[in-house]
Amino acid sequence: MKQNKNLRSRMLRGSSCGLLLLALYSASACALESDANQPIVIDSNTATYDDVKAISTYTGNVVSIQGSIRVNSDKLVVYFINGEADKLVFTGTPAKFKQTPNEGAQDITGEALTGEYYPKKNLLVLIDKATVWRESGAYSSDFIEYDLKTSLVKAGEKETASKRVHVILQPKSKEQPATGQSGSAGNSK
Image (cartoon, rainbow, N blue to C red; front, side, top):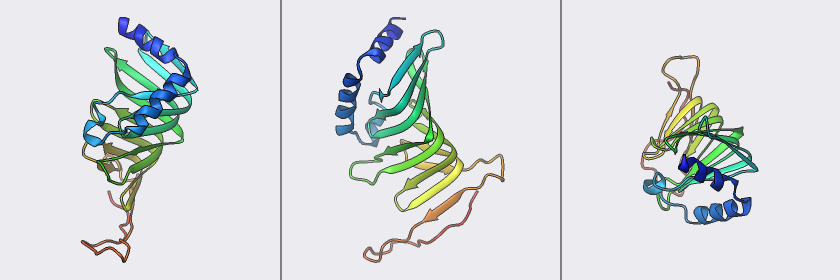
């Protein structure tokens, strides 16, 4: 219970403190390997905590950051187990994320109407009108799993063939030597 009181008091501190922490953590964004070890910093217009249900809800221009992972959403609900964030559900029109997979690499970005982030599993699930942009490709589906640790993108659902995956692979510019085939891929399962 003491952890819950501490969490509540941290949530209720002024937004200027949250903005300061947000600025510090975004300025020192960490590479992929250390993301899971970083604290989750949340900034929003409003925040509530339900001690009985162990759920905190944030609304209004929500920005959540953990290392190099940044999510912008309209609403964020955090589910706690034993005082630790177990699952974060974010929604937006759309909600957007970005992550730097490693130092100096191009950011991986994405968006969806709903997302679920499991910090202990390093897993981000994008649901409904989901798209992930990675290097020169884009993956779109109503269901995308993104492993934050390995940068592995899995799109589509095995249970149904009615939900298709749309992939676009951009050719490399003529200035860069081609190292493999590139082109356009159609729908895949």
